[in-house]
Structures are given as structure tokens and as C-alpha cells.
Amino acid sequence: MNHQVLAQLLLHLDGRSYKAYQEIRGRYQFPDFELAVDHVQGDPFAAPSRLRVLLPQTVAAFPAQTYQTRSREIALRDYLTRQFGQAAARMHQTSLHQTSDGSYRGSGHSGLIAIAPTGQQVLERTAVFVTSEQVEARFVVGLPARGRQILGRAAATLLCDDLPQIVEQALKYISLDATDLQRHIEMVEDADWLRQQLPAKGLVAFIPNGAVLPRHSGISDQPLAIAFDGSAKPQPEILTELQTETSPIVAIPFQSPATLQIEFDRPNQGSIKGMGIPTGITLIVGGGYHGKSTLLRAIALGIYNHIPSDGREQVVSHPTATKIRAEDGRSVTGVDISPFISHLPQGRSTKHFSTENASGSTSQASNVMEALEAGATVLLIDEDTSATNFMIRDRRMQALIAKAQEPITPLIDKIRQLYQDCGISTVLVMGGSGDYFDVANTILAMTDYRPQAVTAQAKAIAAQYATARIPEGGTQFGTLTPRVPLALSLGSHGSPAKLKVRAVNELILGTEIVDLAAIEQLVEAGQVRAIGAAIAYLERHYLNGITPLSAILTHIESDIATAGIDILTPYPQGDLVRFRALDLAAVFNRLRSLSVKTPATFSNVKPTSTRR
Ligand code: ADP
Ligand code: MG
Image 1 (tube, rainbow, N blue to C red):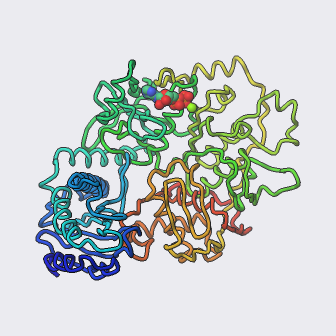
Image 2: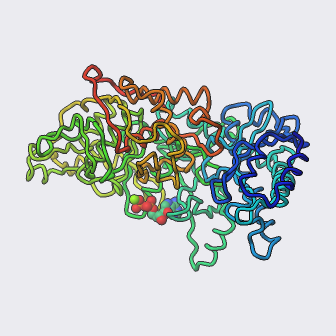
Image 3: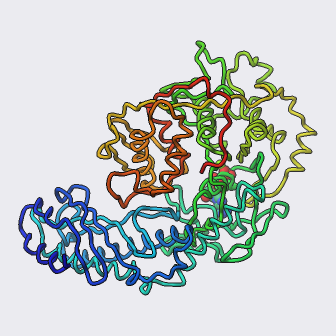
């Protein structure tokens, strides 16, 4: 149907009850694009209506080089999502200004046009798709009403005037800043390239000189900014705020110690130098407040690409790098934590450990074992969020409390075996105990936010002041026991209606509220929504009581790789964001309705190291 039909229909609906909006479902041809009205909300306060625009490349006219590689395609889609979001926000501002009461288009979500929100990371989202044929944008619209009465004229303006303007500004190559777009694409492609180089260079992470790692605040992921070498551009509002302070807070740009410096020649932007963190065991020490946790956090988020001007846009880490922390209170189901913990009081099993309320040490041990099961090859651990008794047990404590009375074998006695037996590298922040000098391969000291390579010095100190610790827990890492998940009792039965995501740290699945605050590498609510959908999907397709969790994760990864994230939901959604299998596993493992079995035939299987 023609777009004029839509305009007439909307005017015709003016004054009728909100339900009559259902009549506009369908497809409309505009001069430049096709508009698909896929789902119409039931009332003005319900979740807004879902629409799409389909813009042929003959009109959108993106040069093939802007999307021809996978990296570029994701970068372009991310860029267009941001452009659409900004254009829609500008439009909303203007329309609010047109009215005295500030509610131009009525009740509930009236007058809203919105696309998936974006942060500092460049992610694959289902908001925008680009092919050689067309550009597709998925967004939501709050169809206007006064009370529950249709405001037909406002709706016609919204869909037939405002929306085409947004499309014009955000989805056509000619309207965009070509230089800015090119920079976005090339930065992302270079970051992907850098990340791919890591294994061959024997590295787990790379942090370039000049990178700005600290963030504006504990609740903002914007750069702390003001790097005078121009490597990070502060947001205008942050700049003003900082300038009003007597002594402005200035981010110290990252600088590699000479011995760990490595240079890469990137495909687009050429040479870049910075610090390579080698495989093995890396210890980050240094005084309090000298930037240790900030460095580790940047490494943890180096699994993602970042927008230019973020400060971390060329910080990359191994795709399976996983932040591990203590998380007392979490639920654990059937995890073999015996490498770290054995003979608990009351004879509780640690080969098949379950609890509704884990302690600091048992939760941290479970987090390690589950990460290995899900394919992690690099562990990132910070003393700030660790259980002390999981990390260390010194000579004096060994003398006072016999090993027979201590269920925990601390990480210090397992960290080398993790690398030697299982190929797992660890980057560890530990400013409070020098015992780790003995087991680390690389030791960095953070001083005034700059790392110094102090391996030789620390090893000399370790020789001079021997701890006389007695290694505990044997010479092998221990068993990795796979688990087979059984049917969930979520009460959801794969129904997406029972899935709610309010924020990045909370998922409501059926009757269960899952606390995700400890899964630090989830960055967007859309990832959590997609993970919720993936759990419903795996429940429908793979929860057969035979397939081990690690294999289920591989299946889901390959399903998404072949058919896209859309495969997870019954109809196309615009609010899903790509997640790692590791983070899906992390959410899955926290379900309190989870039950598993451990087939004896599966014992001693090593973790796979290729999964992402
Ligand atoms: P640590 O873990 O060593 O105690 P943090 O990483 O928590 O230290 O950092 C302490 C404070 O210093 C934080 O407020 C952080 O934002 C800030 N900070 C970290 N790195 C830098 C830097 N390169 N330049 C300026 N401030 C920084
Ligand atoms: Mg810290």
C-alpha cells in the first residue's frame, strides 16, 4: 500500500478507541523506503509498537567497502543504530518544544520513536541490518493517544513526516559524515585484527600506548578523559564539569614498559605500540589507588570493540577472557569444585557441589570451574572481589591449621597447574600478598597509573625472603567434570512472554529472578534479553538430558553464526544484542531451577579452547 493510504487511515482513526490502531498493521511504500508495521501495542501504556523500515541500497547507497567484511558490517550497523537513535532523539526534542505542556503527542509512550540504546561498545545488534540489497532498521513507536483515544493527526505526522526525516538523516550514506563513518569502521576492523594476532604472538591482551582506561565515574562508562595527546575526546558535558573543579582530574594515558612493548602494523591505521600481556601467569601489583583494577577492567572489556574516542578502542583481549570473582549467596548446581575444595564439613560432596547459598570461596571456585567448562582460556581475577581464603594460605596459617582441617586448596597452589595441565592463563591483581611472586611468569607494578615490569626484581625478593610455604593440593590440577543439564522448571516452557529484562543485571525468566550483577562482562540489557531468549531456545532444542552443557553452548553458537540472533526468537526483534557463549553459560548456571547430572563416562574430559 502507498504511504498516503497510511496517512489517510490514521486521520480516519482519529478519536477512535486505541484498539482500532490494529488496522494499520501491514506494509506501506514510501518514496524512499518501505515501512513495515509488524506489531501494534494494545494501549498507550503497553510496550510500544514494533516497526521496521527497509531501504533499498539503490537509495541508501552505502559503498560495498563499508560492509563487505564481517568487522565492517558490524561496525556500520552499530554506527547506523547510533545515528538513528540520535536523529530520533533530536526529533523528539523538537516536537516537545512545540508544545506548552511538554506532552506533544499525548499519553503513555505517545510520540516516541526509539531504537536499541547503545553504550561505549560496538556490538552486533538486531536493530540495524545491512546487505548489498538493503538497509533494515527495527525500532519502536509509541502510537499517539489522548487517554485511550487515538490522536490520528499526531500519528500521521509521526509516521509520515518525522519518520521519513529520521530515515533521511540516519540511514542514507549521503547524509552521513563519511570521514567519521570511515574512522568508526576502520577502528573496529583494526581492533578485530589486533585481537586475532594475540594467540600467534603468545599474548592474552594488548593495551596500546596512549589508551585512556579510567572511566568518568563508577556509574558512567564514558572516559575520564582529557588526555592531552588527543587519544580520547571528552564528552562536552564532562569537560565543563571537570573544568569547574579547582584541580581537574586528568587521565594519565597508558604507557607500556619497554620490555613488554610490542608493535603491530594494522591493516587500516598502521603502526601501533603498546603492552602485550603474555600467556601464563601475570601478576599486577602496586599501591592502592594506582590503577590496578582499572587496568584489569579494561582487559576484561577488551573482549569487545569500542567506539573511537572511548580511550579503549584498541585495547583487545582474548575472546574467552573471563572475569572471575567471589559471589557469596549465588546458587550452584552440581559443579565439580574438587580441584579447589574437598572434604567439606558434614561430608558434603565437592565433586558434585550444589548449594542455594554459596560462600565466598565456594562461589569463586564454582565460577572458575564453570568458566573452564564453558571454554574460558584466560581468567581475570582481582583481589578487590576475591575471597581471601580462595587466594592465599600462608606459612603461618599452614602451621596453625593443618591441611586436614582446611577444605580449600588456594589458587596459589593451582594457578600453575591450570596453565600447565589445562592451558589456562591468568591475569591476577594482587597488591596485598607477595606469595604470588613465586608462581607468576610476569610481574607488573602499577605506579601512578603506569605499569613497570618488575619480574626480575620480584623474583630476587622471592629468593631472598622465601615464604617456606608448603605447596598443597597435589601436583595435578584435578578433574574437570562435564555436566548434563536436565529440564528446567522455570514455568516458562520457552515462552518469550515470560521473559523480562529491566537492566543489565537482572533477568526475569518465568517465575525466577536471576541476579546477574556478578557477571561483569555483560554490558548491554540487550545481551541479557538475548541470553534469556537463548535459554528458552536451548530449552526447546537441546535440553534433552543427554547433551553436556559445553556441547549445547557450541550448538547455540553455531546456530547463531549460521542463522543470526533472530533464530532465538519466534518473530524478529530489534532489541537483541550478541553475547558470548561464556556469558550465556554464566547466566544459565545461576538459575535456581537448574538441575544437572554427571555421567560417569564423561570424566577427565579436557576443556576445549577454541570456543568464543
Ligand atoms: P587500585 O585497584 O590500584 O586500587 P583503581 O584501578 O581502582 O586502583 O583506581 C583508583 C582510581 O584511580 C579510580 O578512581 C580510577 O578511576 C583512577 N584511575 C585509574 N587509572 C587512571 C589513570 N590512568 N589516570 C587517572 N586516573 C586513573
Ligand atoms: Mg583495586
